[in-house]
Length: 337
Image (cartoon, rainbow, N blue to C red; front, side, top):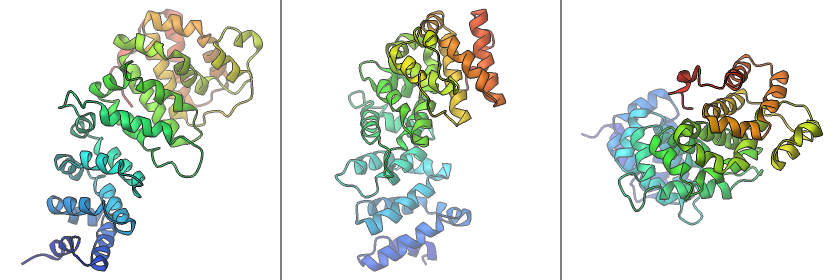
């Protein structure tokens, strides 16, 4: 005899729209609590496909179904089962259906599914040489095209997906491939006023800088956009003198010669300094930093800083620039965002 939960899941496939709507609302409500998630997790094998089928229906059904899947995927065991069931491909296919009413929910689902190596591998399409990186290219394009300061930004959580995949060496390789030009597009989004978008870009740059030892040239190829993204958050609040800005590239000098909004999030400032440190561990990276008057920017920024963790990160870069070696670099070797 079917249990109450099994009957509820069967109702998700009911031919009656009101019954189906009532069932999906109940399931979504259950996913909002720990006890509910625990009860549902035992039925993931039938529940997930049933909810996935509803994602193609009208908004009144697809929205609660999408929210239920997002909530369920916060549980790592259920997320792993979703990956095995092909939910990464399902999400990507639905994401690019014209006028999807659940775009932001599908993106958030992908954020959760790419917390694991298996989920990242599916998104990278690692098993298919011809398609490898196609999903990532589509997401980056959508992330960059949707950039605006309006209330609606359905692709802003793509920044979190990029942070996830950039923790993976294969993911970094795709993002940093100069022929694809993806990192350049991502870095240019750092000037967004939206905190979540800015944080995603910062975390992605930070993770990619762990490849500085063997990808320095590719990082410096986008230095026109990379240095502002790394140095402006840690430049302090002062308006710089003409003497200082004259030694900087135009993008940096112009931004620092006027009053500007400081980057309030200390995590972003720490990530920027750690990224600078990883680049400066390489001799060519140090030369590039000196060439944009980076040490002066760090000096001024340090004088304005009052957060102990951020100050420590400044001091670490400063010690490296003074001594010109990689002393202390081992601590960073496995510390991706």
